[in-house]
Image (tube, rainbow, N blue to C red; front, top):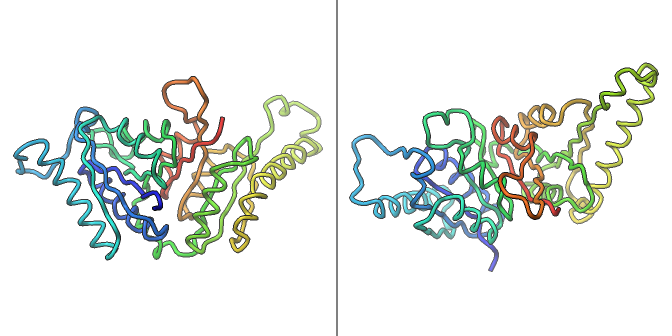
Length: 293
């Protein structure tokens, strides 16, 4: 049986939007949807529940959250196989474990605390930085249903080590499912010492750095593009800071895909400044795909 798509729910509006997106994505992938709620979530972020409603018990509330999310997914995609799971643990551990045995893990873009109006919640950030599988953070205030974003590309940020990039492979596969193009973006810039170099005046330095970016992009796309020859591949080489370039590209994208390093022997978050920026500010859903160290 195919691995399910997993969506983490916490009762917030952001997580319900994630359920909607995950239901559409599960149907697109042809896999079941598994709804997961970690019942100790409130220890991490302030719980938000409808005014005047007091749960009979924490367990009952947890069950209601999961069942309500499942009903929402089934109503959105009739016939979709949906299962639920309530786990009496903290959310980071639960969602990390779920991501390792899923097609992908989907979470909402906002936390449940008072300072979560525009930023990714602490749980989502921790999971995206540590999960063993792809994590999709549903960002954007517009309707992200595939039908509403038809024709928009799947954008992927080309990694520094382009060979055998899981992020590029994931992006091309997602584009194939949507019948959409994939837009591979590579930002480049001249090192600071070039600012005083005579070659800057002649343009020689710029050509060298741009050519390296072109070669890296071609290397990263070669294998995944061959696996899906029907996918239109667009290459975009831009001089500038990677985070600014990717945030700009997200405005017209169906999905933004970015790789995250998973170095052995390190603790804490494994995401860099670029990933951190797009997770907080992208205009479309963001997929963080772990790369091999």
